[in-house]
Length: 150
Image (cartoon, rainbow, N blue to C red):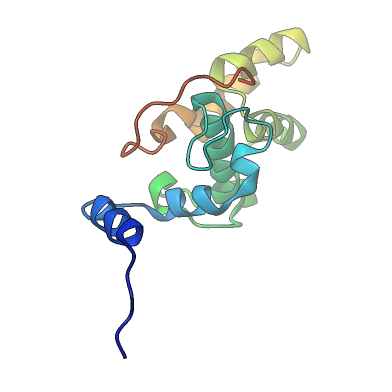
């Protein structure tokens, strides 16, 4: 039985050839949480701040041992399940900041504002190593304009 392929389907298939979509990107494209609140209308586009916020949440999933992400792995899957810091309450507070999209500078500003000990916060941030896990927002798509939410 032959299958009828429309011109649109044929163009879409040929445009997608050669694009390597990672598991993380596949999850992003199917996750409404990525674009929740993002003001950009295209379903395949989100602004960089929204993307980084979404990736930060995936990093925390990975470090908690909830979901393995090869794109984010630094041989530390499930790291947060281990007791590697004396102040677990502070670790949880830092992780909460990161999971909601705070970058290293924002976490440091939060620590100063909330009078948390920087000598304890900095080693936690070094262990989480957020800068190593930066993933470009769909490198195979053109850059998106800011949505104003970031």
